[in-house]
Image (cartoon, rainbow, N blue to C red; front, side, top):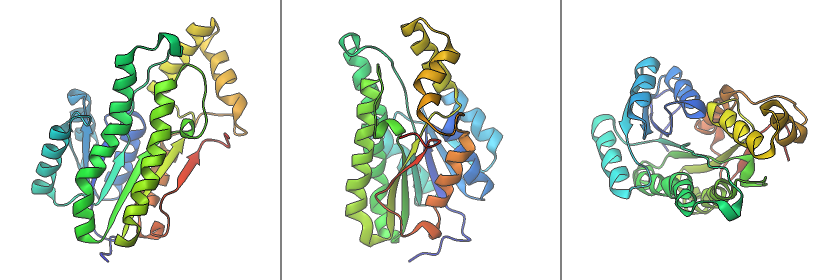
Amino acid sequence: MIDRKHVARVIVVTGAARGIGKAIAKTFCDNGDQVVIFDLDRTAADTTAAELGRCCAYNVDIACEEAVAGALADVVQRYGPVEVLVNNAGVQFISPVEEFPYDQWHRLLDVMLSGSFLMTKHVIKSMKDQGWGRIINISSVHGMTASPYKSAYIAAKHGLIGLTRAVACETASQGITVNAILPGAVDTELLRNQLDKLADNESISSEEALKRHILSKQPIARLIDVDEIAGLAIYLASNAAGGITGEAIRVAGGWR
């Protein structure tokens, strides 16, 4: 087995131009790894890569298999085999199910579930060849529970935990671990936009929406910081976490 304790690794993080993904990318950069951002927002991804230093950005639609395969082939040619994959890219759309647009249903599942599948599919062979690899899927507490108006998001995040466990079973004997992190309410722009939408749907303030839908459900009554998610990601990517696979680990202030 390859010892990755003191060796710079090639890390791919999807949706890392901002939010949780950016924090994860920064933590790996600070660890001395070569980080590659895959994101649809070319300008934001380039800005983040320049800010972080040991980082480069690719403009990739992860729901397109041809785009994924091509971008990963280029990464391997430039930097070497991908050793850690973090499937983080996420989008949200909030609507009552009877009004939920079908194109938005497909968009959310394409990005969060199909995109994670395609990224995994196209890194797994090289991980098997090396006898070492780490795949970390950023699901959500909504991968194990539910709340109103988020049918596509919840379906995708439930599915991502299933994908995690299936791939973990396939790769457990080959030095590869596959785990899911389930963030709770993390203080990001995405969450703030969700709260505004929920507040509009229920004719309440955003602060009341925060208390009603989030803080009332968790013993630690605050939003989670992005660095708390990144800290778990870098641990799961380490040799020390080699015995952890197929797990879905909450970072959610005790939310159940």
